[in-house]
Image (cartoon, rainbow, N blue to C red; front, side, top):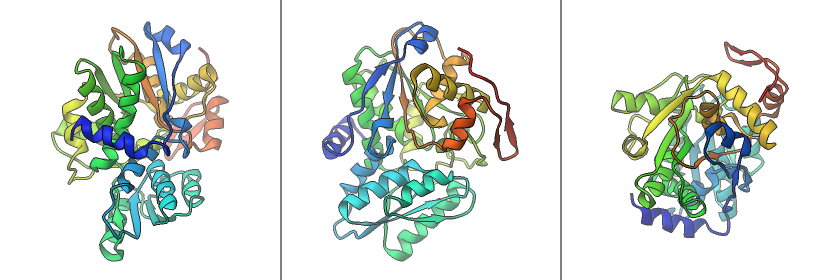
Length: 333
C-alpha cells in the first residue's frame, strides 16, 4: 500500500465522512509538557472513525454486489450498516456476545441484520465468512482490507495537514486497520514522526502477535476498551505486517488506567467517549509514554459507549467486567 491509496480514499469519502476537528487539550498539555491535541472522530455521522474505512470499501465493491457482511465489535458494523443503507444494499453484521447491547441496537437502527455468534471476534468472523461463502454476500474486514486501511489512513492525512509539526501520534490499536493507515499516511509525509499503538493489557491481539513474530490467537475478555477486543486473524494479510513495520512502540494500559482516563477526558474536556478512545490519555496519565520532543496528538475514536457503564465511571462507582472488579474512585486532577 502507498500514500496514493490514502489520497484516493480521501476523495472517495469526501462529502459523506466528516473532516473532523483537531482541538487542543490544555490539561493534558500540562501533563505532557508539550501541546496535546485531540482528533475528534466522535463527530462522524455514526459517532466513530470506522465510517471512513467502510465508505471507502463500499466504493470499491465488485459489480453486481447486492449485500455485504462483516464481523465487528461495534463501530465497524455501524459504519458498514450506514454505508450499505446509503447504497441500498443488504448488510449483515456478525458480533460476539461480548459486544455491549448499545452497539448492537445502534447497528440495528441503521437497518442491518445483526447475528450474535459465540463469545469472541474469531467466532463472529467465522460466521461472516460463512455468509460470504453460502449467501453470496461480500465480506468487508474491519481491519485487514486495503480499502478499509486506506480509509482510516485519511485521519493521518488530516492530522499532518492541521498540525505538520507533530512529534508523536498515539493511536488506539486493535486489529490494526486504524494504526496501519494512520502510520502509513503520517510516515509518508514525515518519516521522523513517532507513531505509538495503545491497547488494554488483557487480550491485546496485535501486541501479542508482533511479540510472537506472527499472528496469534488471544483470549478475549470484557474490557472498558471493548472496541479494542478481538483477534487479528491467523491468515492476516496486511494489517499485521504494516503495524509491525510502521509502529515505533506499543504501550499497554490497565483497566484502572482506562477508568481514570475516561474520567479525565470527561471532566477536563467535557467529552463523552468510549474506553477504547482514551488509551493514549491513559498512558500519558500513567507516565508510560516516552518523553515527547514536540506536539502530541491522539485519536478520540468514538462516542458509542454504554452509558450505564460510562455513568458509573464518571461518578466514581465500581464497574464489573466479567470476573474483574474495577474499584470506584472519584476523579481528582
